[in-house]
Image (cartoon, rainbow, N blue to C red):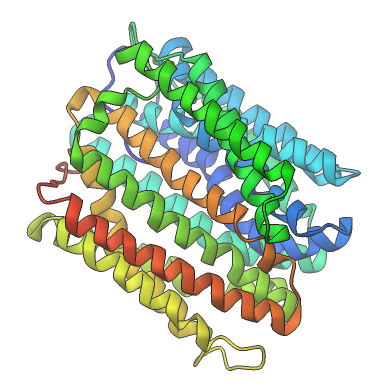
Length: 467
């Protein structure tokens, strides 16, 4: 997530405890995104699920999160950010409990979708509350701590999640959300000042509904196609419905103009369009790798869940350690060079997936791939975040940052929908599908580099931008 714009009305609160509250609440979503990869094989086995069902365990959460992030922030502007943070966190906690106790896959998927709605409410408002509680350099420092804490939580989560899956079973990964959520709610009610934007809030309910339905139709069609390697009548019908609904969404947004959830006139800005296209391609490719690597290691590579978590550890360590340095370098040389080079390095890392073999060594196979991936993402992420903020006028920073976060998650949503054939394979066929999928992901990442080279000639970074 990126920083929201400068906010106005606020009442007395405790800034330090506000920061703690926002870190606790937002870590729910960060942990959820990184821990699920090590739990998917166990979830699939416990329900006897197929490839399509495995995809929906991920996408049932990502779909409402992607489509409703902007609305979640607007509702906070309109009705109060602390209120929406508490509501979103409570929804997330309640549905985490349902996920852990789910007697069937259908119940699990319904709970995951509702969990995504909770995350769409709490994430944008956690950052908006930080912006309201701090000013100047203190604000930048607070957002930096918020981002670093999210990265640290995401780093530790696969290890803890892998240990929990191996010892207590996969439901335990949802139980760990409960104390975090309870702590965030109690702290918010006691220490966090309510804030809202006078006259703010693009409460575009029609746009949110159409965006969710359109993305859902496209995702369902791609999921059916990827699982069966052909377009069935159901997949074609879902695709047509999704395309028509997304077209209706664009018409509604055009009609609403500046009151739209996603004002279309922002896309007249070539840099803004290019940055979001780059985000979609890069994060789509990266999300495919992050889903497949632990799944393949556990299912066919002989790794335990905690072993798979350890295998991924170089990625968050490198990104957390080097991101500040890369952000400073990009501020000096400009963002276009790192935004061109970073995705190319990511593509090289994905091409190294061919070194990962069923009986191969970690240090000569997976480690080089993970290390190069981490370096590439580190080069790209900080300047991408700051450039999105710098591509729009000050009054649109909140909307632009929220939209860019939604685009990143939509990339992951589409990527997951396309992985059915790989997730449905086993043994040597699974490794073959893994190599092919990562080769395609490498090509997509290379296209992201081309977008940076051709569409971002005048791109600039926002001073003190944070991601």
